[in-house]
Length: 236
Image 1 (cartoon, one colour):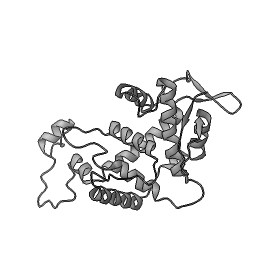
Image 2 (cartoon, one colour):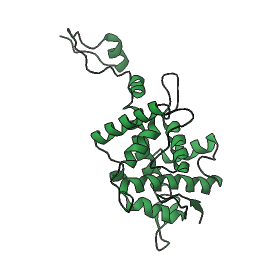
Image 3 (cartoon, rainbow, N blue to C red):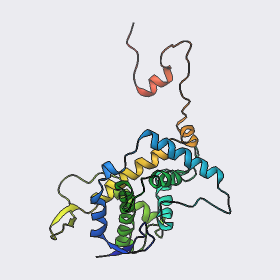
Image 4 (cartoon, rainbow, N blue to C red):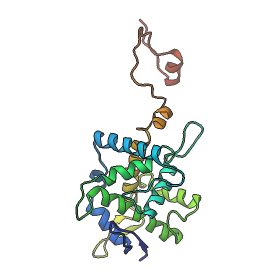
């Protein structure tokens, strides 16, 4: 069974194998582990934008929660989820990695990681381990095609019917689809990426969001939009 170095919160680098990583993911429910309140999101977004504004080319933002390797992985992942295009910048351009660092680093301090922190670290470690299994290298060392191939597999629901490849449980009995934990992590990570992006000025401009505006007179939906939607008003 392959192993991958994962730096923990104390700074050392134990070698975790696939089963240990799955245990970390199982210890913190991803569904519950990646849920934040609106106030937490707003605070992290404000802090991220302030940090980006204060950063200088000679002294870029230094993550407080993520290790250096995790930080590089996060930056690669978010830009594959929201890349730069003709309409707006990428997730890193909008400060999504900083947003994630603040929202995870602001957890109550304690001797152990919180479930949200464990879910994030375990998920990033799973990504690396799966890349090691497939390509014999970490995610950040993979080519763009290799990264895309992995994310294509974990960004879609599993095919119907019995799984063709299963993980072994504690007693070596196959019990879990091999990509189930990766899919669960990536779905939550993708949602968090979207939250971080579309709460920024860049993200709102990308949506062409103009906020609430007073309309003096309402003449119904424009004909162009009705035609695009394939609907019409009933005859009076």
